[in-house]
Image 1: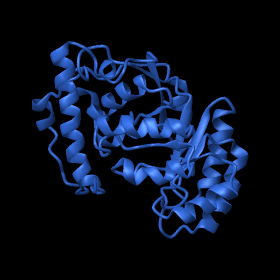
Image 2: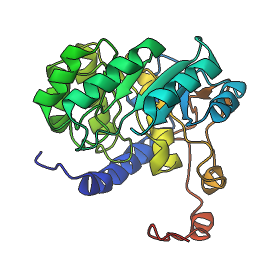
Image 3: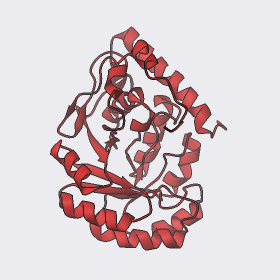
Length: 276
């Protein structure tokens, strides 16, 4: 109950996902069936782009949504992306909530971004300062998102109950597993908040688990997909997600529908964030 750290929650997440996978395989049914059954056959994806060329590359692959990150030059970046992809593609901006970005700065930036018709602005200020977040919420008309930094439903609860966000993007590899994420989804549904999980930064199994969750909940918006960060990503699992026209098809095999190729993983030892 009192756990708030993403490191400890990450360990619990791995155990929880493994238990769902074991039970699904033992019963011969996909995890989404254990979560209540699926309400959709495919999940909309969004990619990341900092340049018009990258955004157009995603659009050419069928993506209908793209997110840009950072604070420096963000307004000009959003303007360039919107001009490149046109009005039919959804555009999001993640400001990452740096502690030095004051609520007044976030409001000014948010207002400058509003003309670009954003689907949402993520983490305009650190979400642990609820009064600051509320100040930004009241000043802007653009939808807001926050929640990837939280590791428990108790951490995310105030954002949802005070209806400070329109979208919550829990990190699938750090939120305590599918057991906690389905509770979060129900809490969010009661306040008309959509779910758009982060998954790509924490590996392909977390991504697959998110597909099962989003298949089974009514308030699924989309899923993060980081396609170009590591070319070998899909080679370390037995059944990578099937991507069609900017959507991931919901797995149908028992359990999570995927196994880890441990020998292949061993070929890519961690460098512990050591640069070249």
